[in-house]
Length: 467
Image (tube, rainbow, N blue to C red; front, top):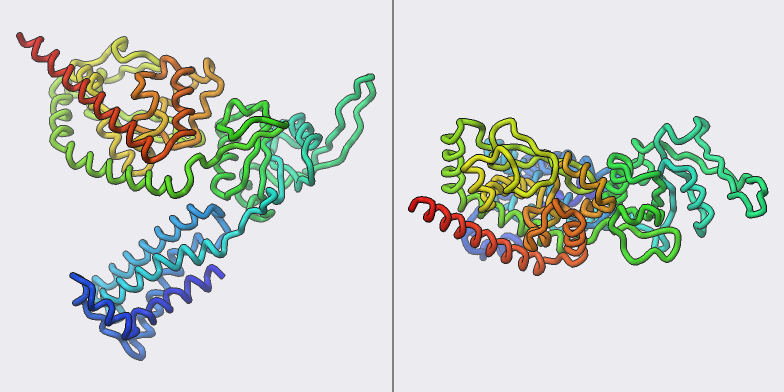
């Protein structure tokens, strides 16, 4: 059905574009209404159909597999693929081939496909069952799996675990707990192993899983959060044993043995608005700050001839990592893992001291926001090496991993840094639960005001120093 729609809808779009009523309406449009359609006939029209269908069949190849199931991912993915297809057709037309698509036809076809293609694939998606659907257990802790099966109401299809968890016969033998009088354990059944974590994506699709219950001995970065990421992509509801509830972002309270994990604290409309705002903010910010970027780069280079930028690996959503660029504020080779206030760092250059006080060292991160690895507002991403130390002091630190990190956030405007991880975590989790476009706007206005104050203070210091 996906392939049928990818073939039929572009052909229908061409027929609509070549119809006289549509061409009359198009001619009434300002600016673009004068573009000709040049309706082809016979072999020329067949060339057009083959070209358009061929392009869209190729670009929509990832959609012939039933994933992802989330409406927002399907919609945005389909829109992205349509745009790629239209750009490919425009490129073909640029070379003036005999089967090129007229610009007016391309515009009408593009508008039609931008509307109907996402609707088509959303209509074909597999919808989760209202009661949670088929359930599986994912994890590496057999004791927790047994506790889950004791408490769960209903059937479980099987379990998914790393190879080291099972004995090799692909079945997990479960035993009842010992009775109070010292009686021996008895078998309560077997649970089939569906596969390893490397096949989790396929298992979620093949078995049409609706709910995944996590049973990891500890919330490991690669396994625990990788599983959450897969559940998020496939629209699978995730639950966790209450013993792990303090390590994840949860909804409601733990009334029973399981807690729902909030995999999507933003609804999809807010996510689209937020991403659009990020692109506009970062794009305009980069353009307006070009003179400042040039001046800072020259100043850093003149001071010690070292590199202008410093790149640092930080933690992103669900424990993934990404690299951020910053203006270098320390002497080359300086490194500090322990969370420390800026004024206490050794090796900070004179230019770097000014950049840190005014926050101008963060300007290159606008490019990271434009790429989509960061947002303007969100929990401040911590250095990977720094997080290891913070997690030892604050076990629930990973609650911050459920949204995209930001350039600024609620903790930053309240002057709280990683040197006080408990308070910072409280502010970050509060932001995640309260986030909205208007809340983001308030945070940005407050941050701009604080940066203005810091810049003014730095200017006053420099004036006094010259007297």
